[in-house]
Length: 415
Picture 1 (cartoon, one colour):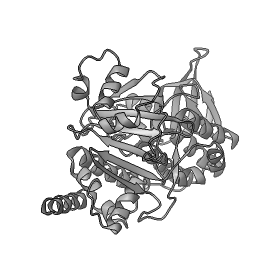
Picture 2 (picture 1 turned 120 degrees about the horizontal axis):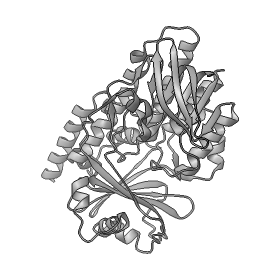
Picture 3 (picture 1 turned 45 degrees about the vertical axis):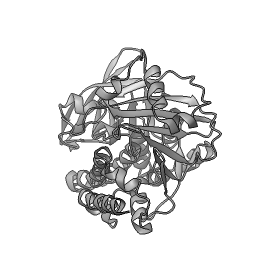
Picture 4 (picture 1 turned 90 degrees about the horizontal axis):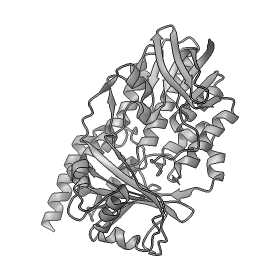
């Protein structure tokens, strides 16, 4: 039986960054990843705040050297309305630019950097069972190449398995999510965009002309390609007529948004589309005896504001700091040190995701007479600074958003 200090399930961004943060503090870390890298993943438009964690993990030189597309904000389009938010013009301190990345390459870079720093990273390793006590954890692990199983003992386990949600499933931690069932259909295209109004340094979020709950992402990469997707109520998306594949469905929905169809008029659709549904998730608790859940392995809201990687890396930072102190002999209250601080940002993003689909946040986004200071506060949240409680729209997100939306709605009606 192998004995390790820390085992991390999953080598994606949350796992790789948590592993590097712990290794840099002198801990023995083993990462077990079920898949092989590189592998495709969505979540390609990073937020500015998440780069602070990449920097702290010692990975920024490698990320900068990769030549990813610079991102300085987000643009929104609905019919003849267009607005954008520049992350460099924000309320909160911190980076104002980030990257739009092909996740296969980005995740490989982070995993390689963790390994370069001394983390033991193993691929095609499936965690099939586990026992957890206050004294430590015992994992059952199967090597997918040989089919052989082994037991690994650890003082603590971090689950960064993303949509695999390993411990949530094994320990019956899943609970119903309060987010409605939505579906995403997506692909990569050679975009051939020549429209000079299209800003490659921003993600473009477009809203369907009639169905405000249906929206599109267009994420430009540095190599002339884009990630393209449509998101909405699963039943409504599936009602599209005459489609026989995800490719047909996506093309028909893109054609239904005239501005987006115009931007992509010369695009080469050379990659089969994929669909993902029922992705929103929640758990009964974020930690337990000798384990904690990171990122999508615990909570996932919605892709609309690209918050997934940022939440994942914030959870990695909080968990790594708490675990380091625990392994040194300190008594840690994981609710106070990890769960409660993490949920400040998760709940902030949740308020704006819900506000988006209810239409109130769209009213704010497309309001043409926005006060500069309020726009800077909203820009901070869109840039990922959802834990900055000095920002009034973080400190009390739901109530303040509804108040702001009412002001925008009333002002627009008067005009």
